[in-house]
Image 1 (cartoon, rainbow, N blue to C red):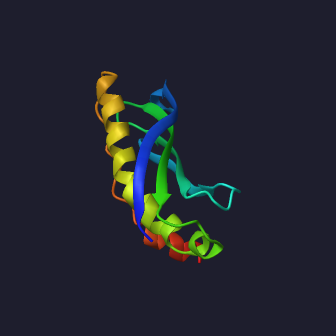
Image 2 (cartoon, helix red, strand yellow):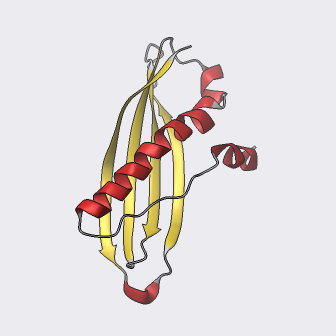
Length: 127
């Protein structure tokens, strides 16, 4: 099966000054795959929800969606495979990292650089 990243976009963004009430760093990093109920559908989404506090004490809550297409219909075997839980998020994550850094920079703040993330270890913990 051939797979392709079709699009990635910010779907929700909130930037709030939190002062000294928080330490900086990632507060939440969740993601999941979303599939259509249509058996003929050949696309799926990886949905991220991240909350991070910058060194300047600004909290950024961001929701980010990446759409993938498949050359074949999506089967239950594919849904249960590691691709939607490991490979697809690993492909989409660098685009999210870049979007977050750029939105902060364009907003007049220091960029927030998310660290690399090991999606394989997350899968093993869920395992």
